[in-house]
Image (cartoon, one colour):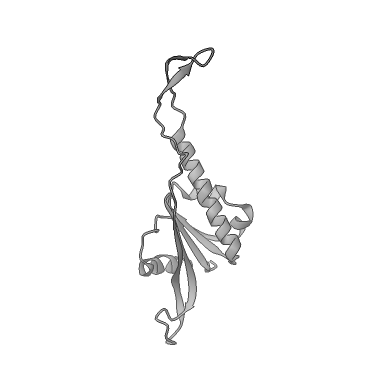
Length: 156
């Protein structure tokens, strides 16, 4: 397996980017090795257009716009639509990052329920350089833990 040069860790609320770097993490010249370095973390903002999935009561207009009472709203799958929009927004951010950095290979780590949604929404050119996928939420893991999990997995 090719060692990805970037790992993008994502969940519904944040994207964390770490880079695979060869060298001594302490800055010395003692036996260089591959380690991870934090590049950036982006916290996703709540979508102001995100609706609830609960029905509501809305004013019903009459012929000339006169009030005519209230009508019961219907369930419309807003939660699924909000997840689809969030996955599409995450994929757009990831695609932009990958295009700007142009890594030869990169890895995507996201929770099992989000991984296929994000991957399906990625640009086709970006997917071609995707060399590693893992279903897990590692967005809050410390770098040392990430190194043992990710670098050991891709070294084989």
